[in-house]
Amino acid sequence: MKHTILLKLLRIALSLCMIGGSSLALAEPDPNYHIYICWGQSNMEGNATVPDSEKQGIDERFRMFYTADDCSQCGRKKCGEYTAVPPLARCFHWNNGGFGPVDYFGRTLVKELDPSIRVGVIDVAIGGASIDAFRKTKYQSYLNSAADWLQGYAKSYGSNPYGRIIEVAKEAQKVGVIKGILVHQGETNTGDPNWPTNLNEVYQDMLDDLGLNGADVPLLVGEVRYTGPCSSHNNVVRKVPSVIPNSYVISAEGCEAAGDEYHFTVAGYTLLGKRYAEKMLEILKNNGGSTPQAGIKIETFVNKESEPGEVEIYVNNEIENTKSIEIYADGQKLVSGETKYVWNNVSEGTHTIWAVAYDNDNKEYTTSKKEVTIFMPQTPFNGVPFKIPGKIEAEEFDNGGEGNAYHDNEEENRSVINGNRKEGVDASPTAVGYTQTGEWLEYTVDIQYEDEYIVESKVASGVNGAAFTFYLDNNFIVPGDDGTPGGFVNVPNTGDWNTFEIVETKLTKGTHVLKVEITGDWVDLDCFTFRCVNPTGVESISAENGLIPDGDYSVYDIAGRFVKKITVSQNSYKNILKSGFYILRNSKGKNYTLLVRK
Image (tube, rainbow, N blue to C red; front, side, top):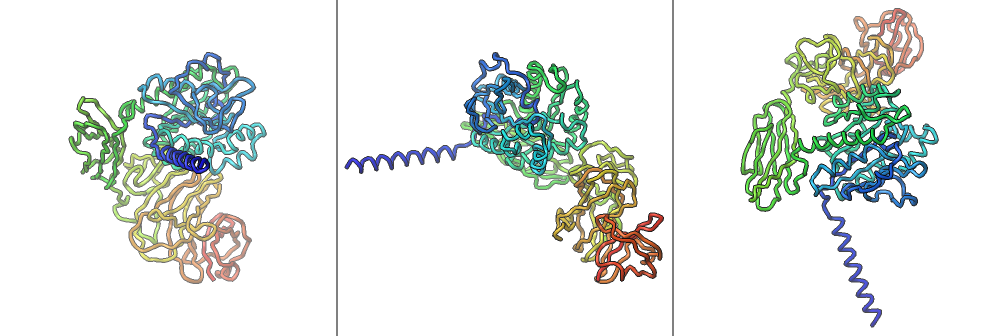
């Protein structure tokens, strides 16, 4: 009988545990628990010794998620949540270090925000590390070749600092909402013009891996010291907002410098942290108030992206005793008393939309603000699509504006303005230059025949690693190494316009949009010539009258590698060369490109 009773009690206890575990798993994240990801080098980690006074009196609303491996000495476990007593990244056992800008970032927020709000931080930082340590595709090779001491720092985060950020952030998302990302990194990358682009790569990866929207999660980027060997990097840092939407630069001017060449004092970190917080408070206020309003949210769907646009707006309202709801756009009231509204005839540009609800006590509840962008209609530059077969001039990209017909990382045109086109593309009257990874151009084309085509690109570059690719209606058309679409056109470092890069692809008849995307910095684009490929024989692409003049030639393959020297006599290359693409260069430097099919 005793065993029967005990068994029943055990079953009841197990059932209660399962019910309790289920309740926890299904609990919604607290919208009033703001989580911030903080990452970078030693200045984000905090290089100053922690004063005893800074370990006392910390508001319990300021929390930290421990990111390093379990530490028995400080009693913290990976992914554990604690009151934010410094150090906030990994533990320092040898010099009581670890005081940094994140300390007063969080303390300032909880002081200024509504008492119902908690603030949590996720701090992963590695002193001396390049931004490559945080890039998903680069961290492993970078750390494998890094100094032993740097590898040791990285081991605190499982030798994958980016992966540790995502791991801890996903745990934090179970209890709160990620509201922003803070970075202080760059000393090791001083002067690197690609740093903003690489930073954007890390930021976008974080957004994707955590299911976040960049419009809702700003990126706050701190300047480095104004004195010391890295101060010039601030010129690069200040370019970030032109590359990354919803990003902000946090000034380090006047932040007290430490006795070394790179770091700040306690006072310097305190001021820098407060500046991060002040910017975040400003952003929160602009997004509808410092307190996120639980119970009311707004969603927007752009049904028609080009002018005149159409935006569908939904208000999800769970506030009890709601008296009225109002929907606003660009400071003007669109409608009252409706939770669904279709905004028609929306003009070109970026528009800000939000909603306000009032309860019976006239208490106001405001949603966060949503931005939508309506583009001017995309049309061919010359009024009619480019015909293929035919030539496309790179500078004659479609009308339609930034984000619609092109994307440029900067608003400034660093070339001569092409006619009346006051746009960010660095276009001269004859070419497009100063290109950077992630930029793209679109061209409306009319493909006359469904066929295999040779695409001859007249390009130039003065650096190694320059590259680009083609899409048709946003589908890759450049063959990769395995022959399937997804490849890139690599541009050799020649510094002149005698570079012709050749690819072969199949195109479908009809009107389409051709996109050229930069996949490696600093390609200069002149033109793209599309030619049909004959099913057999040889097509001479740039030969006169379909023939290559007799003479001596150096032969190169499509990758620019030397193949052999040949003597051409009455088109004898038909019997000399195997099937494939070739570039023949004579002693005067003139190029002839051809395709041999057998």
